[in-house]
Image (cartoon, rainbow, N blue to C red; front, side, top):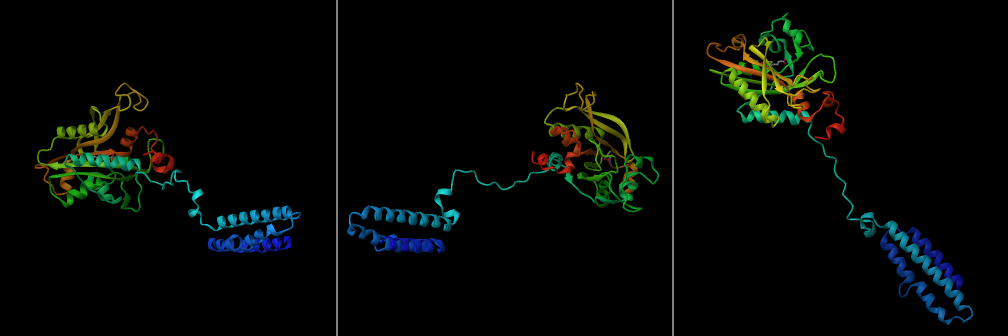
Length: 335
Ligand code: DAH
């Protein structure tokens, strides 16, 4: 009987090892341990054994049974797909989150600025980043050799083609194809061949504004820009107009806002001045109107150009413009 036990165990272990599905395991189990199973029948014969060997054979038989049951269980476990094993599915574990992108801080700022001007009746216009010398300079009252060209170090693609140095050429493109009243803002990327540091990069973003109609005044310009700044920074920040020069506006001004960091007391961001320069503006020069065929006696207009990067830096307290362009995920994912 002991020999038979051994033979059953050996054969069964082999079958279990070779089993390829949980169903097969079930069948082996039935063959061995079912009501008519071989092992079951053998165990039933135990009672007929002589009493002196019964305990010993019984012990061996029970060991064999335990061993086979364990082997069946283990093989079934390894054949059952993971998701069907109830014991490994912990529904309280947090799920795997998909990687979520975020909007670039410059895009957020650009969209917010456009939204505010849209609310004041401005439409959005756009123009090409590769410009001709004519639109970037000449039509804006900067003929060849004009010293103002030096203010904007230019990337030239050929003698006549360049990467636009400002969004102002779109003023010309829009006026050429439409008649006043014109009320537009032009967001866009511009390029300058400049030394890179914390405050300047070779690529940055501007927003151009242009309003042309009969009877447009400098006072309206000041009103619109003040309303914009107060809305953008959600604070009453006074504006200061300083006389300046741009070839395409007359008179021209550079506009400062009361420092958003120290509110005018003087700090490192405003270098103790209490004011921050944020844009250039002025009344459209009659020479520009003549270029696009508008009657300067009849129409007047204002224009302005602001740096989107600068406004984003002030708004978020970012002290290095390069962070916007390095695309370090640790920086970007904060927005
Ligand atoms: N285009 C100028 C620049 O990039 C900024 C500017 C100044 C735009 C005055 C204007 C303006 O529309 O009126 O430096």
